[in-house]
Image (cartoon, rainbow, N blue to C red; front, top):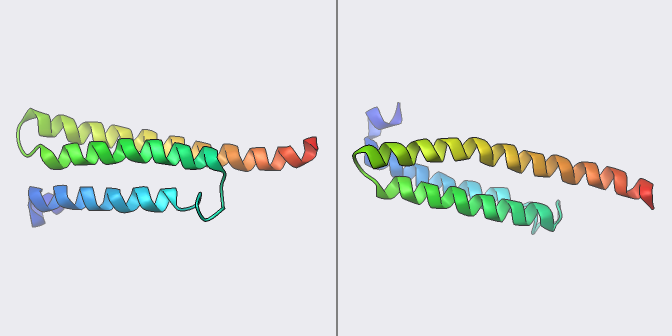
Length: 102
């Protein structure tokens, strides 16, 4: 809907800006002390990949490369969410089991 109303250039810019915000918000729980370094490293690596793909979408304006870039970003966003939530789940499970071991 957005490309029809605002145009493809505005849409690409919003994809990039929202990705920057997403990476920052997803990384924030680690420095705030909610999760351990495993989550921080995973979030940082996945966020860098997401940001690189969003920049690629922003740079490619027309043609088959633009279509490929958007499809890669969409596919990676599904992997990104799965891996980030799986890491969160694993960290919570490890925290629940580790006190029982000691």
